[in-house]
Length: 432
Image (cartoon, rainbow, N blue to C red; front, top):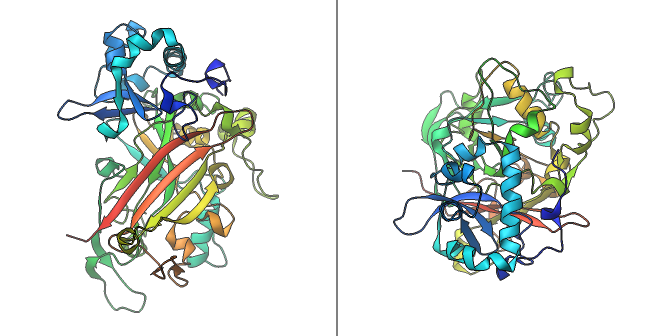
């Protein structure tokens, strides 16, 4: 795991004034993203307070290691992620120095752009997207709706379950969610029908970006898995539950999932998350131990992610009345995940599957064991049987046209500066 160093010093401040005490992007964070201004082509940047540091400009101005110049001058992060964790840490140290030492201000300041003036893009060219199912409380809650006596299938506690999603429909935060159409069949109907989904839902997840890949046929050991992770983002795997219920047997999710997946634009690095690592939750008595290829004492002790996740909803009527968003859920990632990020990566490559820089992996819905920490409306409304009431009196079992969902995340720990992920937002529009 990444060790703490001077870049994590909670007392470190930046000459970029908006970074100091910023809720998401203080100098202790330095997440990576891709942005553009006006008609210019996208370029790689780092968030610092309300600003973005243009890394192409720093590279061309010889303010960073020139061995990084090509990768940092491209329009996506894939090539940079392929550099691996050592260069990632070295860049972090260099940026921390450039942005904290006043002597560098004159050289760096011309390469700052206001976030408000920038358009954000997908961080990577995403060649592959895989979604896992490591949130045990979500899996249990959903299983109870379909199999009350046996909510978890026998393989769940042995295998990090996942399926391959659709990379082409992954979009950055802010993309409208067009209500999908598809086949659905009510339990008492004689035949299915085709039309707009009536049970549109969100799923609160984390996204994991792959850094260095592996050769086809070469597994990734559990001890090395974290060195293949380039960073984390927020991920909303929008889901049409009525389509899903009809189509998912026998081969799993398909059209109910692949119409859109939203991610937040900033990639928070493993180095930034070092102060917020914690032990994975203890497995309940009687649960099997992971098979040897998934077992690592170091990962068990520090593979948990101390990330506080939150979801809010803002309906069309709430926006019109200038009302604040309503919190749907709030909980911690570490408390929700039965399998760690390292175990996800190791299992994905355990059959020799070749992961590549910029591949995206979803954790699956992260629900805690508390009613206030459920990560989907399917759980909150108990499959639509218990609609929730919003502060203005509106009721929701599933999402209505005009509803806007926002995912956010922050990390807090004693003796560390708090950091955040920014937000991942999407607004539902009518089916076409």
